[in-house]
Length: 304
Ligand SMILES: Nc1ncnc2c1ncn2[C@@H]1O[C@H](COP(=O)(O)OP(=O)(O)O)[C@@H](O)[C@H]1O
Ligand SMILES: [Mg+2]
Image (tube, rainbow, N blue to C red; front, top):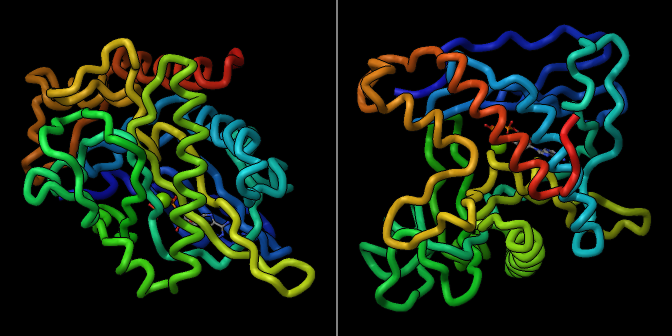
């Protein structure tokens, strides 16, 4: 089982049309035809959107994403037009709202991996490949790869897992030229981000980007980086100080939540059909502190 424990209702804002309620973000279209992305404080674990929220999470991840877009500007243009809260929207939207160019999205989840874990590890154990790419023998959970690899996936509906596909399959679906551009851009952005994170004591194990096309003045198509980037929701961040290949690495943000949900204290079994319970206050507080820490360590700024 998976999904929302409590499905949130979209906000009624004059001039905005509600498009989509994601696990974490709510999407609207404004009268100019731009996309309004609002990051909530919802959090998910074990494929469930939990009944508890982590205060400020949506704001922290939005500010982190904006900071990254800035760091990447010379590699690829991004989709953000402004951070203005639409007139008539709840005051709580401040800091969590991005008004974005509405792009023609490329339907590929562009994953870069510098380390082996998750679905990559599962495939590696079966065939010594990830997305069909051959890897050396002897790698274990958390091993650094000889070099970063592009491991695309196709998008799945809420609750379903994305499906890893080969580069050749991506080229068949979106064309050879776009596939090459996706791979090149994904690896360039990952490399930049990995180096920045490493300097700040954080391992960027893997991350997912989404891209879209915009048509620029001369009628040419231009690839733009979209969605959120390099947040704990789209990436695996591990504290470098405790990185140790050969076991599951503690995740930077959700470890407290996962540990508590699987402990006796929660009374919940992730394998069962029943929805997860609300988190105790101390788990909420500890999680919030982790998001703040990730933001502060990566950006070098103070969260306020
Ligand atoms: N600039 C953009 N233009 C058009 N669609 C976008 C843009 N940026 C992100 N998206 C799309 O918006 C949606 C965001 O939804 P999200 O909150 O991630 O929910 P989920 O991925 O769970 O459906 C995704 O489908 C993403 O591809
Ligand atoms: Mg998404």
